[in-house]
Length: 437
Image 1: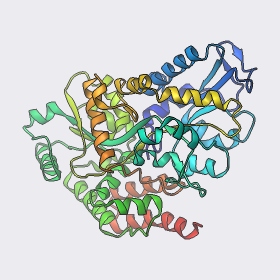
Image 2: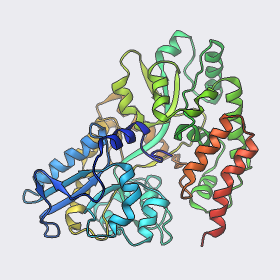
Image 3: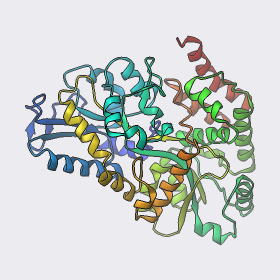
Image 4: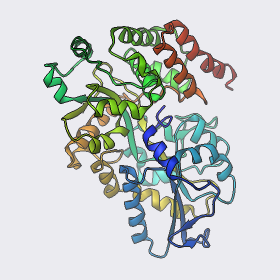
């Protein structure tokens, strides 16, 4: 549920608006057409990062480094939209138009599906050669590894993630000081802060019901009562999941309680993710719980108050995983060049750049980063990794499940009964389980 699984609505809409070409348009770069594909002289590369974003700057640097180390190779780069690749990947990768390397979304319905269909190269030998299975934690690599069914957590690597992502808390430090509210250190003090802000006439929590944030909140509350086994049962189908068990029941009940107390605003049911961040940036809401993918834009957009980040104090687990990854299509013509490029994105130089730009590198430590805010972000992510605290995203197990989570959380915000909402969430999940071979 962050693009809808990993990317922000703001970034996606910017990319979609800027893109005027079709996915199957002729490949061009730097004033020439790609006439050398397959001869070891051309690298064809696609990604869908926002042009001025942290990751795009990192990939620009990686391309520049690749050109230095491969002076006789032409790089043919095309910036696609998330939607273009998401909707057409199966078709394009099964044709002679397949790029040599591209960014692709993680999950059973995306990378897993293409791997199962034989459209992606098994990168396990490359991973072993470079020791990336040691550099990337087991939890962060789950979404890069798939089994024969195309389900994540298998033994074969079909993608290489370069960065991590997770959900954490953003605080308006100035508003906490103004209203003499103590910064939370645990769930009890978190709820005390919510109550104090509400007593002062302020809705404390930013939210957006017509996008991933509302579902993130519901799953985060469930994770506060979840064990490792429950997460694996839900995400990896290792056991039966009871949607009316203590985890999900607590989440739906607590969500409704916070709605009734005014900690959430019921009218936020129609808002998008970018509206939620605007609530925080405009100082209408002192607390926002959201992904680290908002971090970079907040650093730019917030100029008139002090703010900070911290792990959500109500749970030892959070939504998170390794980020989107590089894949090499089976029909790629220059796989060796693609492997060389991926290796550059995992180099110390590029990994450090990812951190300095405000993202979370998977192969660089926080103490190597000079950007103080970024260092705190990376430290928090590393803590979750070390404690097995990355619990993925709620819509990942079942194809099309994002829409179910969206509708169900909107129902809850509109006054739907928790039991009914949990039934709605259970139906497509249990249907998939019943047909899973």
